[in-house]
Amino acid sequence: MVSLYLIVLSLPFIVWYLISYLKWRKNTYDYMVIIPGVPRYPIVGTYYYFLWCPKEDVLDMFIAFIKSHGNFIHGWNGSIPEIHTQKAEHFEIILNNSVHITKGRSYNHLHPWLGRGLLTSTGQKWFQHRKLITPTFHFKILENFMVTIVEKTQTLLKILDGRADGQVFNIYTYITHCTLDVICETAMGVNVNAMSGKDNDYVKAIYNISDIVLWRFMHPYIPDYIFKYLPQGRKYERDLRVLHGFTEKVIADRKKALKTKILTPQDEPDNGNESWGIKKRLSFLDLLLEACDNNKILSDTDIREEVDTFMFEGHDTVTAAMSWNLLLLGNHQDIQEKAYEEIKAVLQNKPTPTTISELNELKYLERVIKESLRLFPSVPFISRQLEQEIQIDEYKIPSDVQAVLHIYGMHRNPDYYPEPEKFDPDRFLPENCVGRHPYAYIPFSAGPRNCIGQKFAMHEEKTILASIINRYKIVSVHRAEDVKKIPDLILRPVNGVSVVLERR
Ligand code: HEM
Image (cartoon, rainbow, N blue to C red):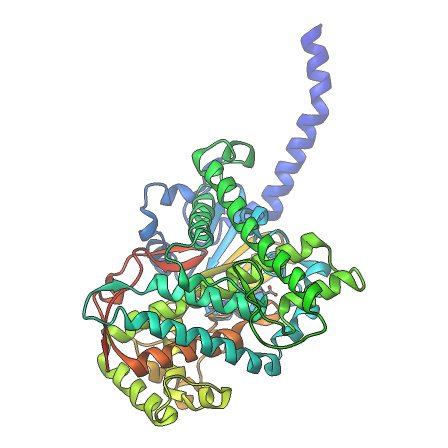
């Protein structure tokens, strides 16, 4: 009697489950399985393929796997249906469409850290914040940033002078601290003096968290309620406290400086402010604080999320890009010499570029930077949640599928770049770009959710690289192709970049 009662009670649930399952088969599964790929298993989806793969081999293995199936496959991140592509034509369909602006579900692992800042938010919130923040990257403001970029570059050169002694050292850490100082002072109006310290807890916590986010991506079957009890989950919580503590201090210090110095808009350091100097200038953070005070567009949480986002995106991406670039230049002395000749001619006897017009004259260096970002894009892949059904080649891709766009793989696709592994800046001569698919080169993504900081990044990269090349001959210890790399949010060389600097 009891069992009959139980069967009757569970009947609606069984019927509901069956209907959902049949609907899912008809609307999603049947469309996915005809796309090339490997069989799916419950819970792990198709990620069993990478279960035993060392993380420094994941990227190359993934890229080779997609390539072997014609650069387009389907997969299952646990139960989430995915497509993976390395074709510019597919990138265009997805990125050049204001409907698909929602990031893939794998970005959810970033929410505890970056909340719903510009990188991770969607819909109205993203639109409103993008509109608000865009003017803070106006070219006039970027011009003002040059003062700070040059000042930080000069500090970096002084520090590197001490390392230009013929000994091998890892330049990655020095570049990281420099870019952190640049983003904090330009965008936040706060000087954190990262270059004066050796180890930086904030930087270490970012590496740990990025590593754990990659781990979670590769282990989609571990739910949040189990993750938080694992060693990785506990480490994540500890590192979050470090990151949020750092950004909260940046915000608090800037608020304090604005309160006490609002009527004295001079551009001088205030050494009286605890350990950090403060500069008065309309920074990105000032604008956010204003929007919070005046018309309550932003809450305190909104501000923290944006500061976390810009601190991370604004320094880690540029560090990786410059470090890979130095590695490549240290491998290719002929290209380095050509860049040096150009820099010498433009700067005359100056140690660093100081204006944007000088940067604009460094045409060869720009091609070097572009080619380096082709081979080593700081963000190796991005993803989107499809909001509508799309057609890709002969396949219909249902809405709600996660589209993973492999920028790294596409940049090395021989359909767009002959001899793709070769470092050849002249690929970016205007005449050599003719006929190349417009979406075949997108280190900064493209479409409505492209990188808001791309001009800033190019100015910073050009200034710092031109100054280093102008002062030292760079010799790399390893070949770029032999360096192990991990795609944990940012494409990093596992053991940094070992170089020898010789004073010119
Ligand atoms: C070489 C340096 C850089 C590279 C290669 C790079 C690359 C990218 C890429 C590929 C995206 C799209 C991410 C996605 O769709 O998930 C992105 C977005 C973004 N980047 Fe950058 N970035 C760089 C520097 C910067 C800098 C310096 C800043 C800030 C000052 C910045 C801030 C952002 C923000 C806020 C977004 C999200 C934009 C939105 O969704 O509206 N990036 N970046």
